[in-house]
Image 1 (tube, rainbow, N blue to C red):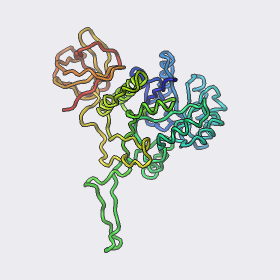
Image 2: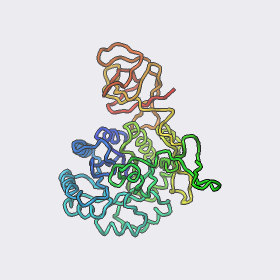
Image 3: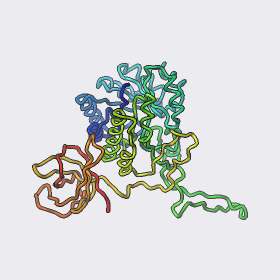
Image 4: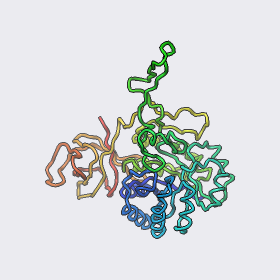
Length: 410
């Protein structure tokens, strides 16, 4: 059986390198104006560097042009598609039928992948897109495993199927939502979502005894996060997904940090490899434990196991991890010390965990000394007060450039 592809988000060239280093087989990214994450850091230079880097390391790159395009956007789409064709990108992720036709016309050498935004939830629709030039379908996240299995059994044999395995869910159907445009004049369907579903809302009911007066309906003093979903996590269901014959497992998160990418990709990489080695002994708990250190919301299997599942709303509205945070990134091994680019405050006595590619258990150690990277003087603490703030410390193992450190909070 062909091994399932692990597909990771890459909001920038640096994030793409981290994703590849921690085991991604492919990454997906977008152009600044033509994808549904227009606020990611990707620019044309990043795009070129990512594609070149991927080819050097026998990896793949897919680029999103998955907005629902207005007529005035098509000249820009044609220009971008021609560039991608010349760069020999491995695939373009598309939602809009008009954009599909345009890609076929001006960039005939690129594989067409139909985005989850297209709401593909049946093998009949898979067949439609296949007849219209699609090489791969990214399924709607609303599907259950039984529905996915039905699609796998009835789709064209050479049509690839990709599904989301981890990451943020959207209140809108397959991510197609007008809430942001209505409230903030920022269209999610054009890549500028304000994430209105993550906001707190207050609900009111009319007082029947005093018509015209409204009574607040409140979960607590903050109101309620009635639209905010938990994050999808199918680490436990991986053996079943692989057995179905899914071609690619996708992790959401082009706007997330390098720390998030490293931790989640490394967890799924190790889990996938363990399943192919011996699926009968697969223990998802140690991979879930690593994911739990990175999560910022509750986790859910959404509708995968049951269409009647109701446990996927996050009413707390919490957007942070109370136990761990991004500590820093390895820049260089310097004799007995390591140069670190920090992301949060580090202090002597802090506990750090080094996330090592292809190893699920991190190396945990305590910071015993810190040295200023410019003067070499010993210091007690360092704050990320300037861009690319660096510090020297000792790590109890050999390291490589790009490895990620997490800091345990007190």
